[in-house]
Length: 519
Image 1: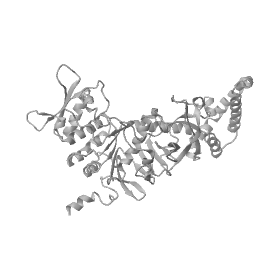
Image 2: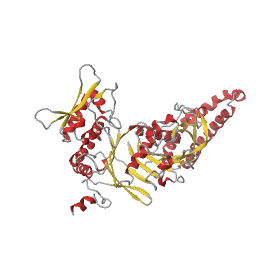
Image 3: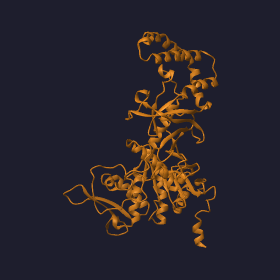
């Protein structure tokens, strides 16, 4: 699940801005304030990772892609190549998968991109890892001019290029809270660790002959010295500060292999306790933490389902493509095929059409008897005493535009559904009723997350009422107001209290235009 996004020098955002997310995030603001920029940053990362086989670091535009952002220079604030572009994504991590070296379950990864001139290529300048508090940096990696051969990698995740970029740790935290659990585990198991080290040293003598014949003589000598040094250190009376100094020096030498802008392994020699087969669960390895954070980010980006501002207009009949899709498609073009082979989804959609007081009922049926691939999607007008079916193109445009969003909200589980202005062509009451759909779709069993760029006063009013009624919590809703100033866009979260009221005043008044028109 996405927790927050920070942008600097990206499109409308010049100065760094933090955008906090919730299960339901509504992004408000005037036209051209920078609302879409928030979604575009996530789309850029997703699009680049999805098409990484193209061999391009960033992919701001591609045929039939999610988003078209033009060139790197066009993505920069003020189109100024002197600036560097930064995107920081903070995720909520499943602690059953990744054990973080602190109590919170959030971690952030920041990517910094540069292009020194129009003659140069875009480069990944730096990767930074942050703890739950976005200002608390854990480590920074800077890209090296050198590349790594696959054989240099101690861990490797099956990346195809023969050589990958190298990123060197240039800064690492010395905060005690990251190292203390490991220190305490080491003290508790000190005798056991020493016993294994001494046993390993005793058996190490068999390699002496190999030192003279093996091409890895320097490596073996390094291991032998490292083993002796570790025994001497653990046999001494060391405190936390001394332990941190030693371990910090080891971890600060970390070198990561990078494919695109994602770490794929480490070229570091494994720690001594890894080599002897003893590793406390609480050990702090910055390479493991960084790759885990980036793996989580990749999974999060994969879960994003971006729906286009305008869905594909409906047709009178369809030809089944041969496969049953798991989603409606970014443009809603896969909706008919999904409904054809998911009758339970047709039933569930009809239940929600009734709850939303949309006076139609979906019907999906084959056409003719000769071909099972030809079918139609119709709506039965429930306001009539006698059943009257109408084709989708013959109903209001708002219904056909909203239908893919309704179905996607119901078919998804643990997905991040993003959409721009779902209220387009939808009357005010239905805009408000969409709040009920969002509130249901973030609960079990679906547990979806929504990122919605909107201008709908009615939608936020319904969510405020749901908070007041106790159907959702104030923290389930993040209302973000984006405004534009001389130094670029800024984002401000407007918090709700337990009564569903805004704690602070809406910028420039709550939908002040309505009050002006009433005067």
